[in-house]
Image (cartoon, rainbow, N blue to C red):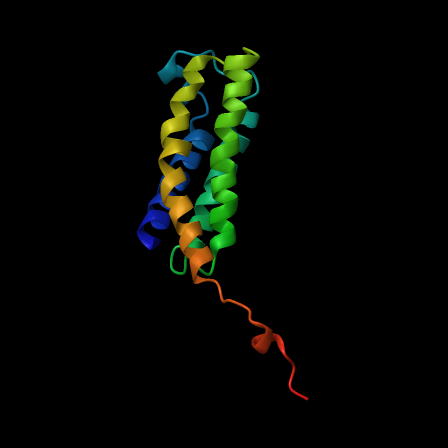
Length: 135
């Protein structure tokens, strides 16, 4: 679990830095017209990089820091949903933008889900005896 989160941290930090430092490069690679306002795309890179910091914090103790993993997984699920809506349903994004989905989102679903499942199974069970206050 720690290895997965350190890998996610590294990936997000590198990808985020790439987008912040070279905001036009992704669009050139996939043959899309670059956005008129590169700062918006750079903000996306900043957010991805911040997720990377969160994963690095969670990596040494994944079960303890499961909320960071949950927030990450939610982002990795909602991002592709937004892509499907924006690109495939409303036609506002080029289908080429989908090249970000496999590496930014899909490959992390199973490992993040398994970490969350392990955290759920590791949770302390409350019993009536444990909650009783001694008098």
